Length: 447
Image 1 (tube, rainbow, N blue to C red):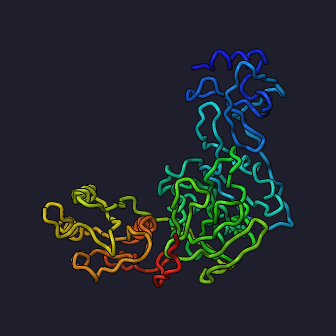
Image 2: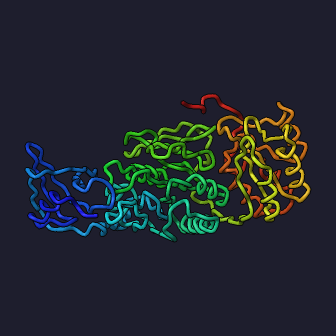
Image 3: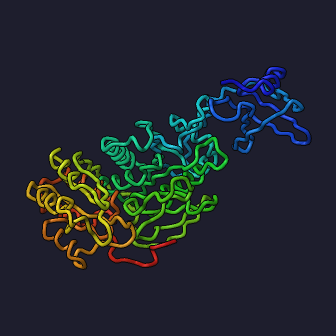
C-alpha cells in the first residue's frame, strides 16, 4: 500500500525519498527530520520523520503543506561505528557482546527492532566510555535475542569471562537482552568459581535509535563498577529509576525483571541492592555483605549443566499429568513454583487432581523435585500447613526464598555435578552464590 494521492504528490514534487532530510511546513508549524520508509500499517496520508533528538513523529500533511528536501539521502540500514583506541592511563576491562536491545536499532524497512548490531555500533551511542575505561578485548561470541539463549551459550560466556579475567582484565561487562538477563546472571553466578573480580551484566529496555535509549548510562555505570570498584562477583547493572540518574548494582542470583518496558524494570528480590552507581563514578554501597575484589585470584569456569531440568508453575485445577510427562521424558529434576508457603494441589476432592501420586513417582524414580516460592517475596515454610508437610515427607526440597528462575538454573548446574539425589538436595540448600537470604528482611519488600 502506497501513500495517499495528496501525500505522494507532495513527496514527488520535492523529489523526496526515504532517508532524505526534509522540512515540512503546514501553516505556522515547521518540522524537520529524516523521512522514514512507510510500513504497511496506519494512515496512508501520514509521514514519519526521525527528529534530531532521536524520537519519531507522525505528520499528516494536507494540500496546503509544503515539503522541501534539505539534504541528500542517507542509508537508513547502515549505522555509524566508533572504535576506542587503547589507553594506558585508563583501567582495562573486557566487553562481551551477545545482542539484545542494547545492541539493536529499528529496521526502517519493517518497523521492527533489529538485533544484529556490532559492538562498535553500540560504542557510537556512548562516546563518554572513551574517557572511563579502555577495552582490553571486545568479544562477540554470538548475537542473539536473550529468549534464544540455551545452556550452551551460558557455557560459552563463562569460558570467555574466565579467560579474559585470568589474562589480566580488571573486570568484564556483558551486554545482553533483558528478557532472560536474570537467567544468565544466575548461570554465571554458579559457573564462575572463585570469582573475585567484577562481572557486570547490562542491557537496555529501549533501542539505540530512540531518544529514551537507556543503554549509555547502564553501560557507563557497569564499566565503572567492573573497572574501579571492589564489588566482585556477578552483578546486574541497570537503571535504578526511570530517569537517567543512577543504576542499581544487584546480585546475579537475587534479581528479576519486574516490568515489560520500564527502564528500571530490574529489581532485587528478597535482598537489598549492593549499591547505587552514578555515571560520574560515584558509588553508594547499600549492602556491605558482598565479595570483595582480589585481582590475584584465578577464576574457574565450572560449566557442567544437566539439560533435562524443568520449571513448572502450579495453578488451580492443573493436571498432575504434567509431572508424569517430564518423568516419562527422562527428566532428572523439576522446580515447581509452589503457591503460598509451598503448596500444590494435594488433598483435592477430585483425587485425579492431586499431585501426591506424581510426586511419589518422581521420588521413587530418583527425580529431584524442588519447590520455590511463586509469591516471589518471602520464603517457603513446609511446617505450617499439612499439605506442605505431606510434600516434605515425600522428599520435596523446599528452597526457602530462592527465586524460581535462579532455582531452575541452579538445579541444572547441580545435576551437572552429581547424580546422587541426596547430594543434589544438599547442594540445592547450600548458599553457593548468594541465592538464599539468611532471613526475611521486611525492608526488601517494596511497593
